[in-house]
Structure formats: C-alpha cells, structure tokens
Image 1 (cartoon, one colour):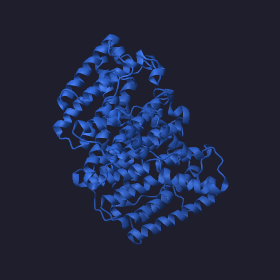
Image 2 (tube, rainbow over the protein chains, first blue to last red):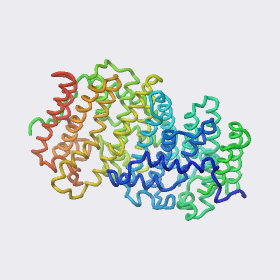
Image 3 (tube, each protein chain N blue to C red):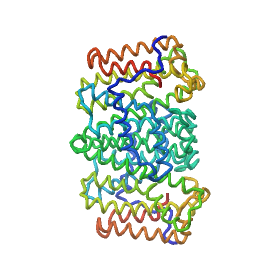
Image 4 (cartoon, chains in turn red, blue):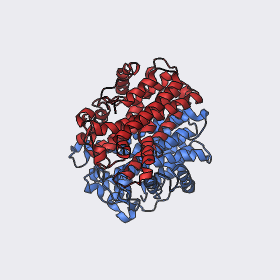
Length: 308
Length: 308
C-alpha cells in the first residue's frame, strides 16, 4: 500500500507547457462578457476552473513521444479541444439527474452556480466547440484529411462505444447487484469506455499530429490503454483514501452511490495490487516506445500516485 | 388570416426521397439491441419517431438547387447527420430543466420513457454521432477538405452563436419582462439562432456538397434565412391555432411559459402579416436561384402552411 502519495509530480517537460495550454484555452473560448452572457460565463467558469489539463498535456506527450519538437499554436489549440470535451462530460456528469454533485475542482459545480438549464447548454456547447476547434486546427486544405480523421476518432471515443456508452453502463450498474463473477469485467469495461477512451485518444491525436505511422500508433494506443486504467484505479483509490478538501470534489461518493469501483470489487489491498499491475503494463508500453526512461514512463508514475 | 392549412404538401421531388432518408438514418444509427441497451434504445426511440426529416430533405433541396442529380448513399448519410443533431436538440429541449415537455411527435418524450439521465446521454451521444457521420461521409481523402468545412460550419450553427446560444437567449427571455421596443428584435434574434441557423445550414451543406461556388452559396444562405424565419413564424402560429393532438406536441405551451413568440409580440393578425412577408422574401430568394418555379419556391409554400 505504499507509493500512494498526494503530491506526485508531472514530468517537467509537460509541467512547463501548462501555461501555454491555458493560453490556448483562452484563445479558443468565447471572450469574457460575450453574448449570450450566462451561457458564455458558464462555459468559461467550468473550463477555467484550474484543472490539471491532463488531456491536452497527454496530446503533447503523444506528439513528443513520436519525435515532435515544440508544437505550433494551432496544434496547441487542437490539443485543448480535448479539455473542452472533457469539461463537457464533467458538467453533464455533475447534473442532478446524473451524479448530482455540488463540488468540482474545489468549486461549486456549474449547475449550482448557473442553474441546471444553463449548465446543460454549457456542456452541449462545449462539445460543439471541441469539434469546431478540431475541424479548424491546424488550418489548411493539406491538413484536412488529418483533421477529419481526428474528428472521426474523437467522435468514436465520445460516443455510444466510448464515453457516453461508459456513462450509460455506469448508470445501469449503480445501485444494482452485479453477480460476483461479472463484477471485475464489468468494472473494467465501464472504466475503459468512460474515461479510458478519452485518455488514449489524447495520446493518439498527439501522435497522429506528428504523422506517426500505424505501427507506432499501435504502441501509443497500447500505452494509452494502460495509462487510462492506471489513472482510473488511482482515482477510485483516492475517493476512499482522501478528503473532499484534498480532492476538490466530494470524497466517498462512489461508495455512497454504490458504484462499482476497484476498492469495492477487489478490496483496498487488491485495488493497490491492480494499480501496481497497471503501472507495470504502462511502463512496459512506455519502454517499447521510448527506451528505458522518458516522458511516458514519468507520466505513468505520475498517474499511479497522482493527487487528483 | 387565410392560407393557414393543416395539410400543406411537401414538393413531390422531396416527398419521394423520404424513404431513402429513413434508410440512411437506419444505416448510421447503432443497431437495435446493441449495447449499451438503454442508451441505444433511447437514441433510436427519439430519432425513429417519424418526424418530417425536414433538415435532411433541405440538404437534398440545397443540392438539387445547385444542379445535383440523385445523390449517392454516402451523401444521404451526410444529410441525415442533420436529423441526428436536430433530435439531440429536441431531447435536451424537452428535459425537465428546460421546457419540461411530456409529448413530442405524438409520443411520450425521451426522458418520460427512459429517465432523465439516459435521455441526457442520448442527446449527448446523438450530437457526437452527428459529427462522426459528417467526419466520415462522403469518404476519401479527396473529400476531406469539404468534410472538415462542413463540420466547422455545423459546429458554428450549433454553438454559442447558433442553436445553443439561441436556447440560452430564449431561457433568459422566458418569464421576463422585455421592454416593448426590444421585443421584436429580441424575438427575431432568438429564432434566427435557435432554429434558423440549422435550417440554413441544411441547405448550405447540400449546396456545398455539389461544389457550389461562393456566389451561389450566398444565394442559398439568403433563401435559408428566409425559410427558417418562415418555418418559425408558422410554428408559433400553429402553437396557438392547433390542438396538441394535431401537433403531436403540447399546444399552447409557448404562452403558458410566457415565451416571446410572433403572436405574443405582434398579435395574431400581425403574426400572419409577418409570415406573409417572410414568405415573399423566401419566394424572391428562390426565384433568384431557380427562376420562377421550382423546388425551393414549393418548399416556401409548404413552410408557410405546414402542419407540424
């Protein structure tokens, strides 16, 4: 059970890009005070709440692991589309008819501040904006095939066989007695769809941005799957081992809602073992991509002990 | 006040394509019984509720007005993306935190049948699916620039300065006293964003599909704006002149919710005059595109007296 630390560090190469990512987010969001005022304010409130920007940073890591140097502005803007799409899912996930959560990233959730109707629309409009950004960055007809491929992949990662599908499975499993032999596989499937797909996608879009070939892309996808699993096990563990204050969101809500989680299926000790297995898989996939040390291996360590 | 008839006919050239449109919808939707079962069932329930398929048919009209012959399968599938996106907006619009409506297209609304959480996800996933279809149809790298242009236009029509923005303005104006001099312009702005943009977009995407040049596209856009306005005025009129049974949705709800509508702002007689002005503008724009008679002029007549 050691190795669980609250303040794991993001690799410096990514940490240093966080300010650029914030700048790109400001560039793609509607300006402060723009009309319609309540909708724009709600979108900005939730996006600019100071998250880790994990998914844009994973895009950058995916690009760097395939040999990209410092990315130009329009690539950064494509990367932050992933943050817009992630924030859309958080806003809708927090709504009263879903998880009914009042706290997110240490602040009242969007619907608590702006009301349910505006929060619903803010989530909707952020999904739309995410696709608009991916359709327009990087610009130029010569990049159109790549943009259109990125959008198709993103839509599959968000849709019925991705994030929305995972949410639906999660809903269907909440407060329901799943037979013992199926609990572990059901849990893995929910996590893979609900959060894993978007994490893998972020790395893949970065790799594709650099023109990675099919073989390299497969390696990035394998690493992305392991990393997504790792983040999710660690997240489940934090929900039971940390306070709401540290998390910036409501602690203990998974068990309160009788959700399938790694601790609830494997027990606390078993969940830490699962996490260590996922960490080993992610490091192995990282090694195949970049040798024995590098950004992806550092990211895996961060995922295993992250403080979010 | 004459000319308001319940059974206006769609031009035969479009009416005959309705079965093809239904076929294309079935081709792009997840199959019946696919997992996750509740989510897929909710998406299919709302999309396959037998609407008029107006937006895909407008895509076909836009294409035909620019000289396209019978469109291939993949163009039809791109056209039905518009129906997926429209249905997403209807499902969310009907939710309790929005219009709280129990009846749509003559059937219980999605959240009444499947619950709020699943309806929310079904709307979300239909937006996603709409973009996936536009990113993949028509296929081929040579069409990628056109696909990516279509997606960018669609996202703008749905976003903060489009449909979602119109919904937000509508929310902000509901049950609120808007000063008299601003009521008409506010109403026009809400309608133009909330429903007009998607109607114009449908025609534009059809025109762009045929490779229409910028000049012709401007003409199609002008016609689309007039047609969108015409549909909306007629819709407002039907809400006060028809029964719920005829409409297939709750009649009289606009005034019950104190919404800004053409009858509430201009009075019933004034609203019919506004409709006739919009009809004249749409016919004039149609004449510039296709001469004195044709599909677009027929569509304008249909819009003015439509039975939905």
